[in-house]
Length: 227
Image 1 (cartoon, rainbow, N blue to C red):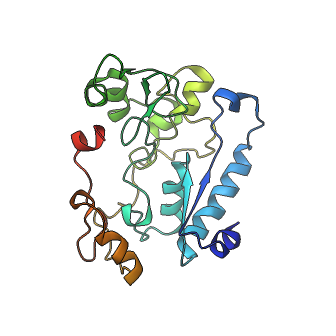
Image 2: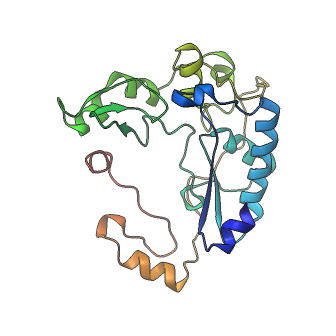
């Protein structure tokens, strides 16, 4: 798959893992053991492959495996991964064709409708988003030492049990109870932009501007929420 993506000239390969919601409920999912093997192989490829960015989607456990593989590997926005784990309600949301806003495409929990309120108001004030941004996780996720960088997928337990804060059913990891893991660097390492990449970046609007040797500057929450 990686070789094929590179042969097509792709600059990124995003591997999505099934979340058993919607029509996905009727699809045979990968086993815990198979998920673990596949994600570890993907983690090694992401670290070792040059010329293409390899990313795991709907798989926040990637960060735990990255730390286990190489504690000095800076998993940052420069590598396509933002801080924390599941993105639902924290860094993105879905708007359905009927105008309902949900934390992600796999969580069918409406936070409000853009037919009745502005998206920015829903994004900032909806109770479900507040829960996801300050999660009180239960089960293994609640005691896991990797909770801050992983936290598990929030859609899987919601689909399985209706508990948005439950443990991720696809994760095979058993917390060791130490609460101690290596810290992920907060600053991205310098990025060596190619001339072609720099030319594309220079065409961005000011809000997307990139300074020399850094990754894209994050957009303010209000600005991001209203775009």
